[in-house]
Image (cartoon, rainbow, N blue to C red; front, side):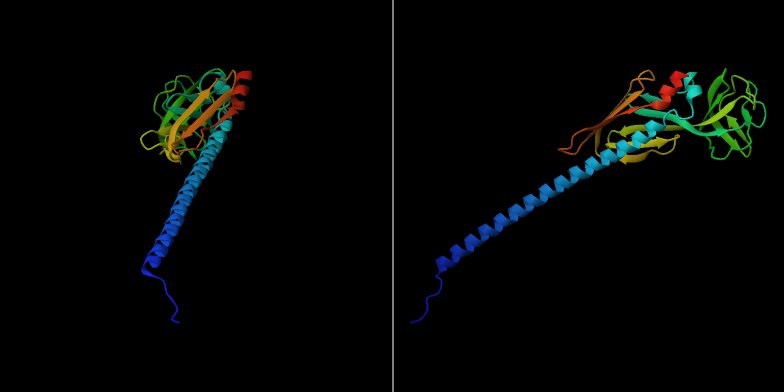
Length: 237
């Protein structure tokens, strides 16, 4: 007796069932892949936000470093938070006068100008008088200021402090949190930033708060609070 094979109807039914199983499996794989990539994007976004907060924390902890005298005198602010920027100021390096500087002078004679460039800011302070001036030009052993000095300063008593200025802000259209140091080019720190909020309670409380919101769906806002110890020390002077 000749063995009976599959009929046309049976083949069509089998093929249809196979296609249903394959399509269901493909749909599951595509759904699983989309879920994986979403989860990966959320994880990477959270890690990037935490890394950005860690960088801001380091700068906040340095804010006011070496500037307790000038800050107590009201010449500089360790932290200034506005709606647009978070601005931080600390000491970069201390310079030494080579000769006496008189009120009205535009040129400062220094023992060394290493590390100073045009556009940087100086704080001159002797405990009784002080001021902040911008460097217009750098010479081998002198600096030319953008504005004349308002007071005189002696090499024996005056401090010439090169300021480090750090600013954080959000490039709104691009959604990028950027960091600018000393008026240079702004470097990207965090992408997909929907909003950045910073608050500073002032040297009385000495507490700075930062909150970052991302555009990535499913990622919660990240925030932190930092005690500005250098500002507190300046207030205690």
